[in-house]
Length: 251
Image (cartoon, rainbow, N blue to C red; front, side):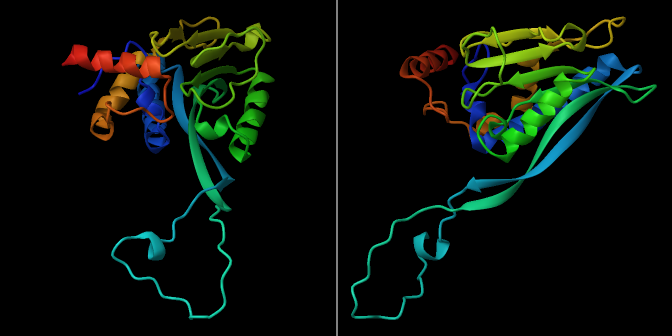
């Protein structure tokens, strides 16, 4: 059973689901935009690749899997010191997709659309790469749309914002340093906003609520979520209890 959220579904933020949600959102956003901005513009899916060193625990399956027998070390009469169990950093290759809205006649990049991932908001190579790219775009003649649907991590720097669970930033090249910020919280609808193009062209409306619902349905994510348990990352108790009332309404 799926509660009918008025806005963001916090269960989609689960790291085990987020890469699928991110990929799906970029794909449906590209399809929906190309339906209305062609033939003058085209939404192209691009990717950013980097290696990030992360602390990832890799269990020793020979020791921890039930039903298996580990090779016993050679017996000794000496008393061994008990070690601590720790994790060590490993290098993990990451691919992040984003959209470039290009003018078909010239190939010029008009707008960059980014959907933030957890690695873009925590210390590491992913954040460094993204922040450098973000600053390059902000110093260019291209517009930037930055969609942050993650409660955890550090929000991207800006002056004059307010605290919120989620946010969308629309930075128009001809208006910088000012930009349009759409802050919203868990119980609020996802904002509808205009995708910036060239000044002489009408701008399409981006309806994130509808796009996220498409992703949810196409990926059958309802089969991967247990709404009777806290999401990951967890919510304050009051918000979790609110979700349970939504489940009761659906029942």
